[in-house]
Image (tube, rainbow, N blue to C red; front, side, top):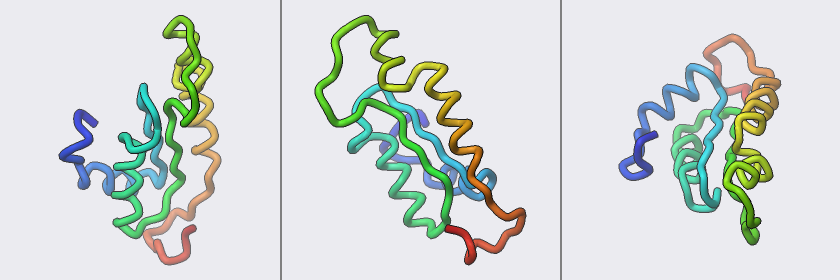
Length: 102
């Protein structure tokens, strides 16, 4: 996403419909950021999906080199790959019936 506001609702809903999975990654607090905005759109769409927000947790930030901090909070390449693997484990039916999904 190039902006949080205005958010591209159509792109988010299309991603949910196409993949049934969403991962957001942001280099700041996950509270009130991109992940929260995307989550609002997903909830309003009424469609269920596996959803994971990656970013800085709501606690005091560690001090150190940027790449070390990114690794610690899980938004480096290894952290993102692990999140993708986790979300890909979600099992969904291969149909268009959304009424039976959680």
